[in-house]
Image 1 (cartoon, helix red, strand yellow):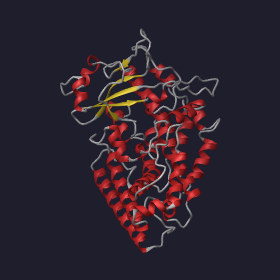
Image 2 (image 1 turned 180 degrees about the horizontal axis):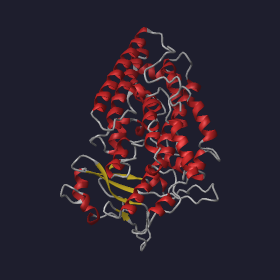
Image 3 (image 1 turned 90 degrees about the vertical axis):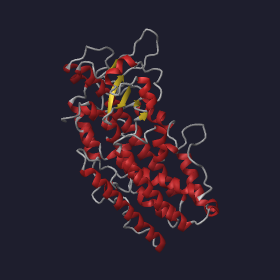
Image 4 (image 1 turned 60 degrees about the horizontal axis):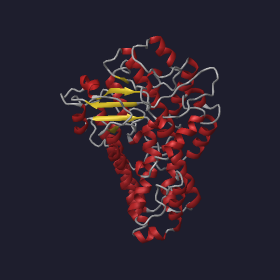
Length: 450
């Protein structure tokens, strides 16, 4: 609450907040973004031009294009709600902080209709409200796309394919069963209470009502297999060298530990590429996942058959990482970051400003969610940030689906690697003012269970 309105804290959340998935390197400004060198030169502290900073790789962007044209929640006839599709330009300054240097809330394409670009040098209320709009857009994309679609619904596809295609004695069934525990149950509850008609999204979020369907359908078009592979996703967003990006650093350590474990199990249970090709159950499982993830008439972005052990290892790593670590990273920080409503408003009740100098604190208060919506929002993020009563964390397999000695040994090795990662993270966090714990293996549940 003390620092939420400071630019460094706003920028930090793109790296290590509840939604660390939006920031990407910007090498060329989008056509609809009206930002110029003149506007941002006061924010660039290396004495370089905007073009030179772009070339040097110091400019990043969060682009909420997915919200363009989406109909804001209209389920409450007494309260008009609004959505925007902002651009937020971020700068890696010489102190290695990520700070916002320009925000544009509209995407006008008609000549004569200007796109106002808000800047840190504007009056405090203009800049504060522009940042609130970005955070509100970020909250809604996070909830529907990053959290609901890319962890909950994706994990359900994996779970259903596993139950349908793999016998309970199949080694891959035994490997995956701990990682789909309670997933179908929690998703059923979500359909009944959160994303249904008159559910929580309708009550509290600007993407309630028809917007839920519009946003998820749009997001399905960009949901690729490679975007669920953490190393590939980091490369695609150009964020491999971003400083203080603990989500990436910790995520990569967990990814490697999971991959190494999966690789050990696959080698023990298969031993050759031919055996993978000949395994009818595993081929049916992969095909089922592909059909479940199909995002239109185009060919499925997910593999529909496997030829090698290596391909099987990658797919199973994606399944386990998505259902455990990725969900932990985007779920358990919600109360931490969203409980202070101005930091991440779930909806906005006034349209985004189109001009500068017309906003005061009264306008900001009237833009923020009312008391009722804030209460629904608070209750939801509190509940979603809780662990299960008898939570099982990554590497804890008390049900002992495997009894074979070599696999038991592989599980033991996995647990040791995870303990090492936990210790590395703990040591680093001791030197941080704000620790990052969401990807510490001792706090990563095995499955999507809340």
